[in-house]
Length: 130
Image (tube, rainbow, N blue to C red; front, side):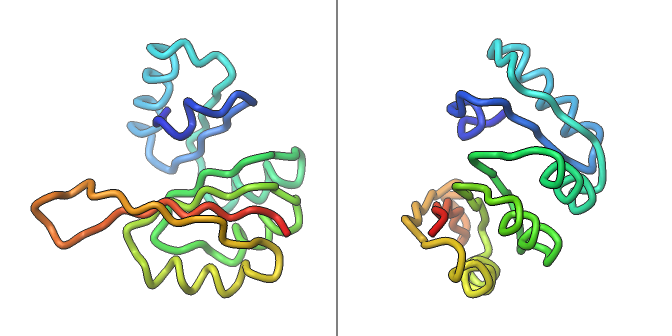
């Protein structure tokens, strides 16, 4: 569980394809007493599509180098109210924004200098449903 997910009061579902990431997230949730969080180790595209068909989510936190078509369509069709898109790839963010802008407006972009000795910038883009 990261700081973004910890701030979400509703249920949190974390998906990762690597077992060690899921274990770390579960350990963090336990340490932070975040009892409304669960984590699954699956193919991210398949899990997002499956979960969005079965559930409604208010907020989706997506860490990505670019969203697949399956994830973008799942966000649109499931009517997720807000997307927090975390990336260090501005070109992927711009491309995904072009695909999402009919359904979501870009509320803000917050730059984070997570790598002070590198020419790399992390960004959190907040998309809100139109």
